[in-house]
Image: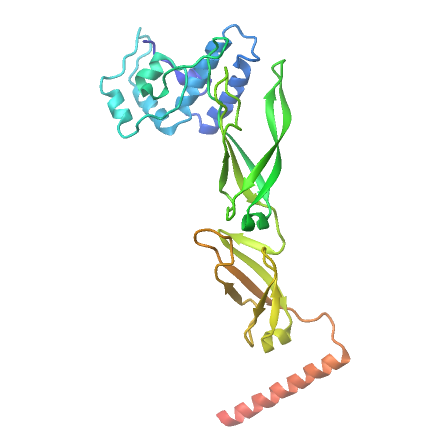
Length: 316
């Protein structure tokens, strides 16, 4: 069989990064997609491009291909992998379950897990669509209770003239209770369209939280800052604390300091191990004092001075 130079097919160097390979694939796939391309060899090129990308996007396959390919000498009429090649590569991997219509060269290297090529109703090569990724923002309250929300995504599609254009798509998404920033929701068959009637790829939505001036989220823990008055800090009053699930009553201990944190166990993001909710206290003085208030503060000052003098006499 003939050796296939996947890097040449993709138009990239052997040192190309994964992002460079992905960018090249998208460009070539748009150009040679059988549904829009006017190139005579579009179907063959599209098949070769997908086969090359299938190998080069996978770190293990790419490393194995690089190692094997380095032993191939240009000018040879054929290429035959070592007899033990499949045993070495497939050890412990099993069947990947992926479908494609790949060449004998690919099959000889990576086995039958990718075989059984499928064809569309017009006999065209079929190829499963690539997975897509997007990021959506939800409210913190949605993660507390779970919710169903509509999100509008902007896809890039190829029109009948082979040009790229943006197209809005609205999806109804179920937000599971307890989801955290950075986690992903998988929507089956909502990714890139498959060729020749093959299955669409999946869409992975990465979750982020809308900015909220009241809360700081760290993992499953949530912190809010609460301003209190000097007398509340001194006397230990009961105060209202806002939480994503509604306000709660919190009793302050007497003489608590500004900057202190009070922990409400299990009141953070819900999950198998629920996070905690922290209340960071900030003592704030009024911007101005009435005559009566100033007199009271003067009385407190005098009382504090008297207590200090008594203490000093006792210590002496």
